[in-house]
Amino acid sequence: MTESAEVQVRPGAEDDLDTLTAIYNHYVRETPVTFDTDVFTPRERRPWLLSHPEDGRHRLLVAQERDSGRILGYATSGPFRAKAAYATSVEVSVYCAPDAGGRGIGTLLYKALFEALAGEDVHRAYAGITQPNEASARLHARFGFTHVGTYREVGRKFGRYWDVAWYEKPLGTGTATSTST
Image (cartoon, rainbow, N blue to C red; front, side):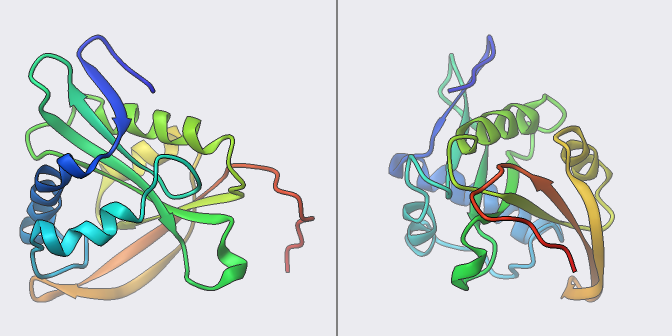
């Protein structure tokens, strides 16, 4: 997996569940970046973790400090939509520990995630970014995502409506031909 001098990226494991849940719950409680409104227990979050095997289209990668073993964040690829024809599209996201922002953790995680997905039958990656979120927009732009549209006032949290901008990145060539309408 991808590594830096101080941080290693590895597949997520069941032992990470408490910490990953705590990181996610921070965003549930404090930010509009996720539209979940109720925090999770690790037990409630376990099916999510188990839906990300070490190989395949749906991955969970964790950034961990080498010295302390502390988890600094995670990146995932998961189903874009439930219908079968969407199988070669994934939705990706990155969540960093609240005090780990600005350290390049998101970049390290996405680099490892897209390297892992390179050998999989994945044609497109999508990311929904609650607006405003310039840091996330910059991160996605660095990885070749382009803005494809914005859902206006699509979610309500903290007593207000939020827009979500959608970004797309081509990943693989796939085996089917492409047709745009």
